[in-house]
Length: 206
Image (cartoon, rainbow, N blue to C red; front, top):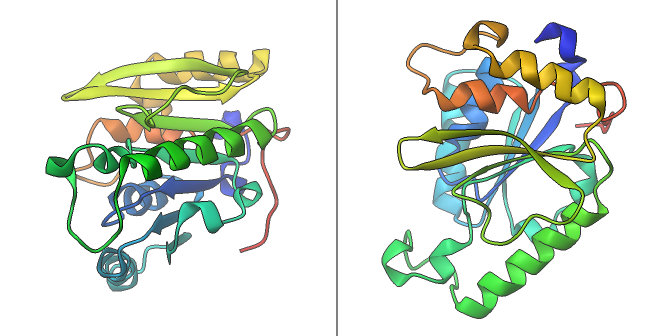
C-alpha cells in the first residue's frame, strides 16, 4: 500500500455516517483523514464520543446536511445508500429528520452534480450503491460481494498507474495496511480508497 502514494493526504467524506463506524475503522486502519457528515445530532455525538474515548486520530464528525458542505475539500467519498430511507418508511432510522421521495431525488441530483465537479482521480466507494447512477467518467475498478450487497470502488478517469496499483490490491489482503482486530472484510476495500497518487491527493487543511 505504501507504494501506492501519500495515503496521509487522502481526505474521505462519508455521506450519511450514522454512528460513524466507517470513519472510525478507516482512521484506525489507514493514514487517511476521515470526515463523517450526519443529520441526526445523537448519532454525531455518539461518533464523537467513540473517537474521543479511544483517541482515534484524523477523524471528524459534522452534524449537517451533506449538501451544505464544500466537497472540494475531499478526494474520496463513501456512500452506504444513504438516501434510501426517503423511499421506504420501513427503513427509516427514526423520526428526527424530514424524509420524502422528493428529498431522495434532490439528494441524488446534488450528489451527482458534486461528483461531476470533482477532479479526475476522485475515488468513490459504494455499498448497495448511492441511490442513483454514477456520473460519466467514473469507472468501476473493484467489486466485491459482502454478505448482503456489492461493495464497489469507482475512480473518475483512472490513470494506468492507478489501475496497476489496484490490481495489486485486489490480489490479496496482504497488500493492505493492517486493520484493527475484529474489522470486517470490507476494511480491505475501504483501505484501497486511501491509495491516492500524487496527482489525485488534495492538500486541504483540517
